Length: 277
Image 1 (cartoon, rainbow, N blue to C red):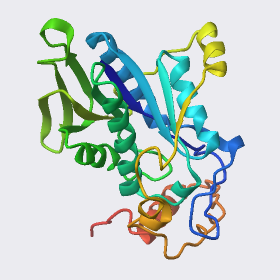
Image 2: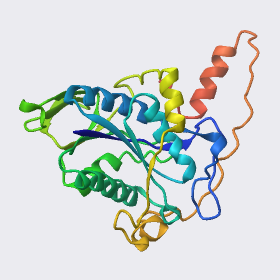
Image 3: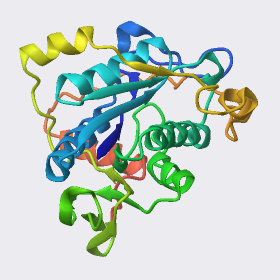
Image 4: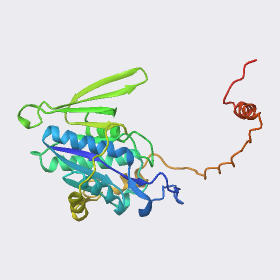
């Protein structure tokens, strides 16, 4: 069996970010990092694979430099990295991204029915888009059940070790408390950023990941038409954008005995507190 983990390379949130002339996020190699919200998903996938006796396959989508996300997964124990890379994918929105990722997962599943994909794990969102919908959209494309925003994940192997009867149980916080969800595999799970800390890679695995060969897939490999992906297939587009206004200079108050009054006045003027009569 295989466990697929979805990983993504995103711009560092501490870097200067902006949109290009076509309304797309500018991506530079020097400011690119593994999506922080995917780290918990990667660790969850590794633990789930241990419980199932499975291998972890890391799947990423993006330009050539995005292969670094898959290599990060190899460093910590993933058996294979798959990189969906094609110029036609530029401008893809969440719907198109999910369609492409689902096709890649289906391709892996169909190629070797004796080694099926039992579980897909993803972070709850990516820090470059914060849409939080890709796990559910991937599940919809695959026709599999989904459990999103999981705070804990427990995988139970079925009898015989062939995946039959295997289940995944998750707990998640809601506005009204906590709920537990259980479903049979195959399934898609989206996890929160607090579910688990990613293990530290060893030096030998780091070296091995640098020289490992990633499998690269194109749009044609997935049986998709270029008109169905990228900006051509996107349902969401950026109509207008403008730079965030500069932050006003800080107001420094020297306390001469009335600083408390000045603070209350400052907050009241901005409607942040109510002063009763």
